[in-house]
Structure formats: structure tokens, C-alpha cells
Length: 282
Image: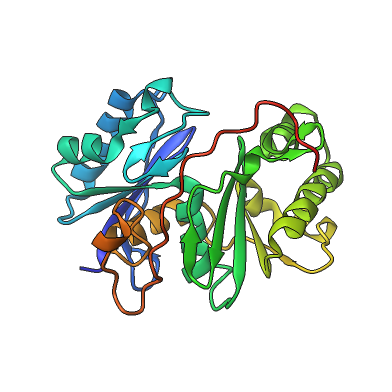
């Protein structure tokens, strides 16, 4: 089965569409439902169920979540209800929808999609996808293998928390023009370049639609920087890839994963990490 339903849970909207996971193309018009206020598990469950029923597809469903996901459990809740912490969300959605549901971090899903079908297609090396929005999401991919739950938006740059200082929300909050914001973002990217030496940075999130305003200002010594290509479809596509088994099955233990021959090898899930309690020197 190659056409799989992908659902992307966002801060303002929950979006879904069937995806041909062989090509990364949406097979029907995307449907969007506003995210319920407070984003509590029961309310989100109802919206996910509505989207599943709307499209009426058989088979598994991929769902993104804006937080740490480890073996189907949600382990952080920065921008959603705290009841998500420690919840077996795979089981919650599977029981509600009657479909086998596979959960993945939202930035990880966007990263997988961009690496396979978007701006990172054909890149044989290390790709670091960053989504700038309410916070900063990250996906680290090496030769097709995802290192899950990197949460690099929570790094400290001397006395500054990265996503609080350099996200798109920070740009709006501090009334920065694009050149001013790009200076902050460049400082952050330079720090990541020092730590990870990626061949390619892919810049996603809401700002990817305005690449002409910032792309000329983001210059690094070694790494290339490009805007994301899949825009708001990336999370949906990556979620469907996860459910189809064309991405590392982060829900299962490594011995339970059986991807196709051309799929990337599974990555072991890492223990959840919390943002540091106090600033650390860069």
C-alpha cells in the first residue's frame, strides 16, 4: 500500500491528506481543522478521528506531534496541554480511529519529507532541517537515517535560549526586520555548524514562504543554506512516510522494524532530553 493518510498537528491547525509515499505527492486536497483551544488530548483525538473519517482510507495513519515522541509516547508539551506528557498517544489515536496509528515528532516528519522529496533530495551527507515558527524544530538526517528528537531549538547561545531569541515568533515579538532577524538566525546556524558540520541546512516553517526576504542574509563558512521546498505539506508527507514504513519506524524497537530494501535503516530512539535549567556557554 503506497497511499497513506498523513496528519500534521500544528499550533493553529490540524491538517491531513492522503499521500503517495512513493512520490511524496498529495492525492487529494488537504483538509484543515483549527486546533482546539488548549490542545488537550481528548480534543485533539476528536479532530484526528474526524480527519480519518473524512478521507475514509484503509490502512495505517501517520500523525505528527509538536513535541518529543519516543516509541509512541509523547514526552514533552511545550505548546500543547500538559496532559500529553507521558501519554501513549499511539494507543490513544489507534483506539479512537480504529486504524494503526504511527506518531512522529513534527519537525522530524518535515525533515524526512524534505530529505526524501524536497530540498534535500539526492543529498548524500548530513542534512539539518530547521523549522522556524512559534519555536524552532529540528531534524538531523545522515544519509537517509533520522536521529530523532534532537530538539536543537532548546540550545543556549551563551545567555540566550535559541528558540526564544531566534524563532519567527521572536522576530514578530521584537519587531525585527528581516535583516535583523537574519543576524540572530545566522548566529544560531553558526553554532549548529560548529557542533554538527552539516552539508546542508534546510530552513522550513512559516518563514520558508518568504525566503526571498532572508536567504541573502544567511551566510555560513562551510554549510549550504536553502529554503524548504515542501512548505506546509512537509509534515503530512513525513507522517505518511512513517506509517508506510518508508521512514525509520521510531515507534518500534529496532528488532521489530522491517523497512523495505530501499528505505533508510532504522535509528534507535534516544532518551528524552529536557531544555537546560540554566544558560550554558556556547
